[in-house]
Image (tube, rainbow, N blue to C red):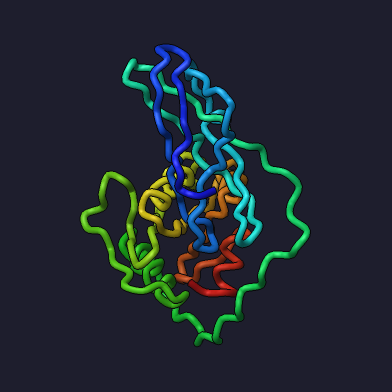
Length: 230
């Protein structure tokens, strides 16, 4: 969908608006906005659930299906309107364009992890090894939980002994979209099953750190990142 506005009338107060859906980067880098269903009436939001907060969108460039935030419009009368989105149809017949092969990289040199700071440092070194540029630590750790930032990158490192949660994965993804960046998550204790399922849906790469400092990919998005590089 292009950036043209969609005419919208609030069903509560009858005010007219022009809505432009926000565009976020697909994992392939292509800007992508949910396709608003023209002519369909929006509905006021009176109750929210996690399921209603997301819509499925397909990238026309690479064919990926991802979960995107449900488009909403706030009217001056106080109503929040859920914008109708065209449902995803059958995938196009033409195959996705293959990505060029990444050049060979030297073996990653791990850093033994003894402290939480070591875990963040190791993740930063690994992301640099993958090809991300200007990877910097955030000190002290911000309230957002984003430990590392680079060009087109935000990353979170969980050094605790508890598996990373679904909320952690979703928050990282939202921060990544807001920054037009790729989000990558590292954890010493792995990820909860629902967090892994959600990461698969959102194409968030997940890595587990062991105490030797060697990150291991735990989902397809992470394996693809290791193969192709940043």
